[in-house]
Picture 1 (tube, rainbow, N blue to C red):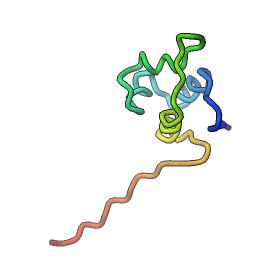
Picture 2 (picture 1 turned 120 degrees about the vertical axis):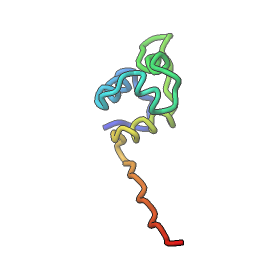
Picture 3 (picture 1 turned 90 degrees about the vertical axis):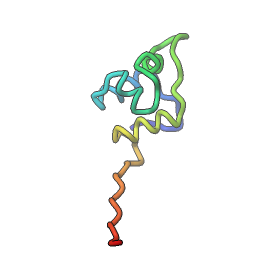
Picture 4 (picture 1 turned 30 degrees about the horizontal axis):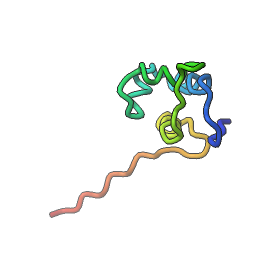
Amino acid sequence: MLDLNTQPTPDQILAARQAAGHTQAQAAELVGLSGGIRWSEYERHGPTGRRIDAARWQLYLLMTDQHPEWRLARRRKAAVRPA
């Protein structure tokens, strides 16, 4: 199980993306990034890697149904009232 109180490792980020079946570009788009190049920085080890911020990480987990505590649900359509 993922520990949301610690920074995910590049390997955990890669594993979550692969589990969702996304390309780097698809993962980036899902959380509002401009392209796959930026997402690849989250999966990169070493000084050229970038840390994913907690909100973006949790959003990705929620959007891909991998969050350990929460699940998104589609909002029900409101009943149409006659005019």
